[in-house]
Image (cartoon, rainbow, N blue to C red; front, side, top):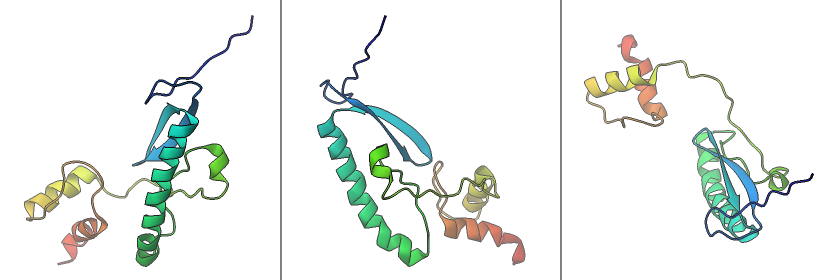
Length: 124
């Protein structure tokens, strides 16, 4: 016997919906969205992507961890950062930075210039 699965939009409860996958902060997310809400999400992602490009080019960064919302959109703009492990322990870096009077958040990515300070700590 055949079964049919109907996806319901997670935001407004409308049907039909489609499962949408995207990446942010190195994590994969999924949400079921109607065509209308999927389009709204894509517009937001596009706006941020366009705003980020000049900064990335100015800093010499070649890629960004923005993955298109759906597979049909991926053909024109799929770039990823390499998945290499960092060469430092973030908790050790945070502790050193705080001990040395630098402001750093308890969570999240540590800015590169602060990591560089930590790396240069022994060369003084």
